[in-house]
Length: 228
Image (cartoon, rainbow, N blue to C red; front, side, top):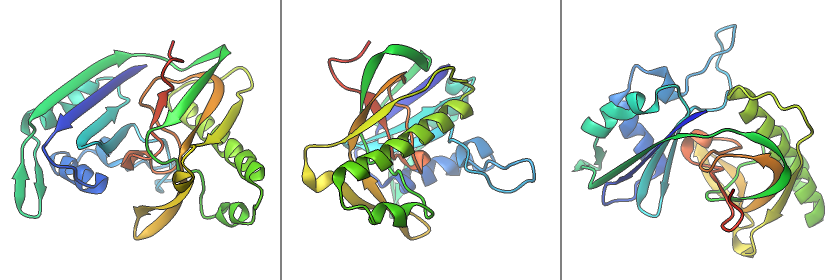
């Protein structure tokens, strides 16, 4: 699998939707960057986003899961800039990584930590989750959501898993970050969680799972000391 990962320093830390909007200005007619996926009937679908935007620690990132990631993003690297509140910011530093890595079924357990909040719920199961008082019941519920989101990601990226995938979620030690309401889109907020999970699947760093991965949620990295 080809993975392109762009890191940029504009000297400011915009909200992800602002950063994404600036990139889309340069790709206004390119559905790949807008994530305007449609099903066979022409209706909007919720396919896994192949272009994902993130902002963390005053750095802006774009992940591309395409056949030609550098070619896809080169125009932005050469011409892109941020325009925020009538001020223009140009990139002070730009680093692009063109990688080859694959999702692999293993006999080993891999430990992944969410770098940004994971949004596990949708409008259909949010009320079911809110009814749960026991932390272990909540973890079991999230385990099922992670499992579902992993399968969805794998399917979208062309991987057909042969064996059963385990997923064991754990909350972060910081109780203030366990559950929190985060801004989503269309003025609707979503409940997100911080923590990680252990699984018998190797997932390349910087992929994401859950709702709204194109807006920076659910960003994964393998726990330090556990990387293959």
